[in-house]
Image (cartoon, rainbow, N blue to C red; front, side, top):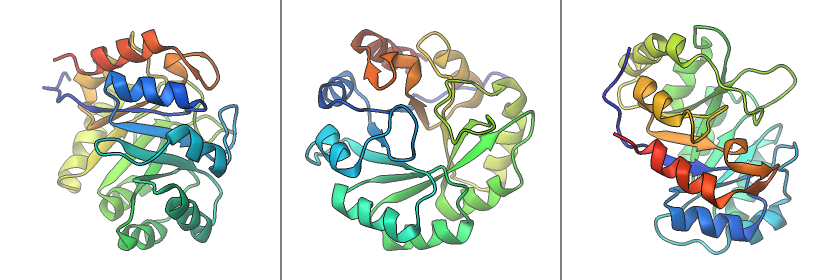
Length: 221
């Protein structure tokens, strides 16, 4: 089913270099993301602060967390002055509630998708956070595999989630590239699209041409 798609915000994730973060911001990215959860784009909190630079209006500062304790997440959140806590470590709705109650940053719980159905937990997490990230289920990986899920198959389950949790914002990640993001946006109409490997020349090294192309294609009507 083809939807009337909005023009989603774009998150450029897996940033490891300050110059890539600056270029992504200049190209129009709404969110800049760093990864603290492992993998080839892993940075330390100290490195993340250098990559993201000083807080500034109009740019959301996001970090991807894995098997971190809530107090660790809160400590990094405060140190980096984060706007988004992207939670890949199978968070509970109760943990999301606690992090959201602080009001400092938005928790974005991640739901890993396989096949033609959303996991049972998706509705609870969406209700707790008001937002949910859909990423591809790949055994042994929290995310960042560059593998898309079946967007066509998820269109109806996603419509059902939106009816069940009115106003929920949908973030789509997993295997997005300049060549396919417009088609996904037309199918799923997410509020945010999240890209990392699809705009790189090497892990953690962004290609400014592909970043700019991605921004254009994501916002195609």
